[in-house]
Image 1 (spheres, rainbow, N blue to C red):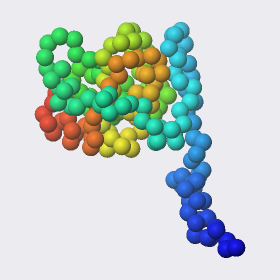
Image 2: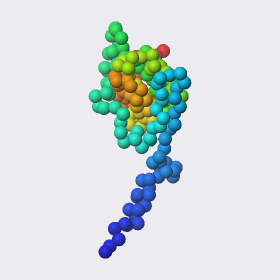
Image 3: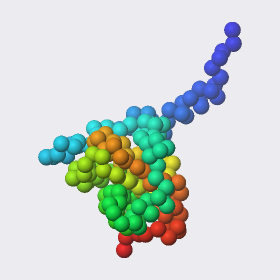
Image 4: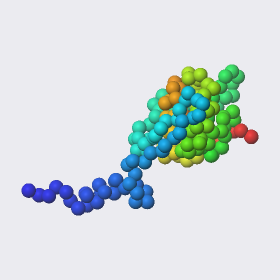
Length: 173
């Protein structure tokens, strides 16, 4: 019987289990403390692997920049917009900060605590291309785990500049 495990196959399997810098990356978690005096608690841990394989939003929860710009331009009650990155703040958005940081997730939940659970909420970052963004997944996941039912993600596949600013949509002063 032939040996089914070729040496190069074993090297490939070993390489898959090692992340950047040669460190094993299959069990990375971020611990988050609860918010004192709040009924909302920051989720206790998020698996990096889960965030890369399971998006916390559906395609129907992606919001086109043109749609948000129109909602902000017309009168009435626009959605609550949370800025989770460092690329710039859309006019009317609440600056929270990078959602990859525990302090920012705490700040997000504190800001959201005043809102009804069915409030229209939009989250965006725009610091980098959408797919590898380290901030949008924790923000969306945190709001949903806190019970918000109308969370949308601003669809910025390239970045805030290319998908919002270059289109002439409004920015904060």
